[in-house]
Amino acid sequence: MKDKVLNFWRSETFRYLVFGALTVLVNVAAFKLLDLICDSILANTLAFFIAVLFAYWTNSTFVFHAPHTWKNFLEFMGMRIGTLLIDDGGMFLLLQWGCNDLVAKCVVNVFIIVINYIASKLLIFRKEKGEENT
Image (tube, rainbow, N blue to C red):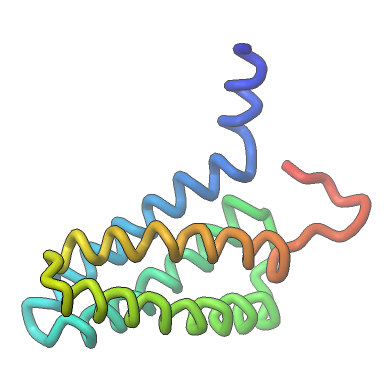
């Protein structure tokens, strides 16, 4: 059992969860600060881009151990911009339904994290055959 726990702590999935949580904190903190000076959807969009830059750096450096290339960066940004539609759409719907903005932000982020992990692992930072999967 101890070995399973240690292996999980060293795993890519665990690293993704840790840096995913940190990315959510960056996103939420940026959102709350920006929400003081602009409307919620604009604050959400700007916070999203701040968090995506942080996520690219942490994902490529610490999670997937992938090189920082323009190709990876552009694929990562493209995929994340796609999820921005889900992010803004989810925020819009939850705010329209009377949900607190911070609660809405956190709920939407859970879905975004799952989508982003799958896309990052399978499409952007995929390992070539024979590469170590740490």
